[in-house]
Amino acid sequence: MRRAAHLLPAIIYFTIVSGSAHAALAQTKQTWLNLGVGVTTFQSTKPGTHSDNLGVGIAWRIGHGGGGWTKSIGFGWYETGLRTSVAGLETRVGSIHVRPIMFGYGYTVQRGRAAVEMKTLGGYSFNTISVDNQLRQNYLNAFDTWVSGNIHNSWVVEPEASLWYDLTSRVGVNVSLGYMLNRPIVVLTTGSGPTPQRWNADMVVMSFGVVYGIF
Image (cartoon, rainbow, N blue to C red; front, side, top):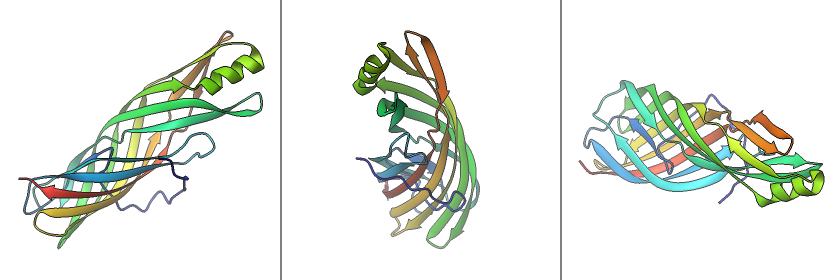
């Protein structure tokens, strides 16, 4: 499913684990391992060149109580469609799959049933691309040549804020907002040779999740 992209303020956050699954070492007094379902939207900051998506997946929370400094791990996996111009025609390049593995550090403030965490995650993204037939056809029509595509892996950084709220001793909800910076190099190769270009694949990441305490 695709949604229109929105530019959101990059400094104010409140959010959570999700469909692509952000795992936070947050606090919970009653349970240590909490599992559930999350919904995450990835909204493009460059709507003219690539698209948004919405995902549903596993949400989790791992915690031992209390606030303060905590370590975090995150997997903000998503797919986005790239677009470009070929001989004046808007053309779909194809889809890229972004699979980052991130680690970070954050600070948590506990107030009753609520816990607010601000953190920064960073890591390495394993990227793949599938070239669209429309790109091949437009290159053939305009330049009488074939075209293929490749994408490099990339480093990613995501500042994020999340809010956890305990509905009961075992049920918690979370909402979060983050900004993922990702600038992979996409290489289009034709009969004339390769043309590398760095793409802005930044995403505003918004999540909502519900978890249940297992242990």
